[in-house]
Length: 221
Image (cartoon, rainbow, N blue to C red; front, side, top):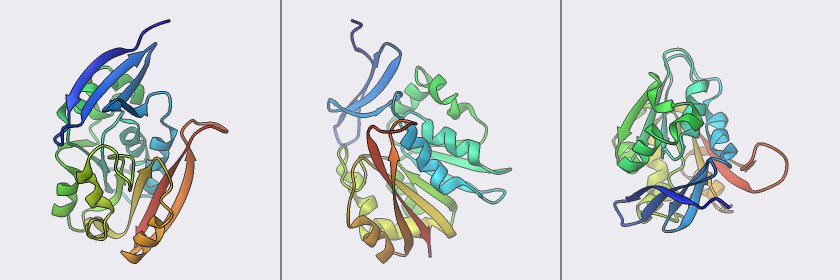
């Protein structure tokens, strides 16, 4: 039986230990030993983009918080209209390098696409600086509204964070938030902060059965 091989290591700003591990062609990113994402299960990451990037207007500008394995970025790029741009925000430089290295072929090298604008920064800070700038924002920076990796991510899901996301969106713009588990009160929280909100249960695999994740979406009202 082939062993798991550590292909890369990093430490996030809050001290979380990240590992890129490989086994028989499959890659997993782990945080303090816990699996975060896998090249074998990425359908929900694709759905994150599909739910908010369809029917965008020419020149649309969308933003993804969290690079992960690159699948959401690739899906967003493929849905962009003419002269559209996908702004990919990632805080950890090693994750960027992994996506330029061994992970690049899985999502067909999205960082090399001329429609991608890469920003190495904290997604919370980018959102705070943005005003009526994006047609869609996709967030896959942690386990969702109950952060697992970085407590700094919890700000995104507060009233203040959601209001800042709303400010960063253009009129009628959409946000999609990936979550490993359901948060029963989060749709109401989004609604209270100016979104027409919905909850979607999506499969981790592209097929029937298996693990399901949650994607919360909201349109700026």
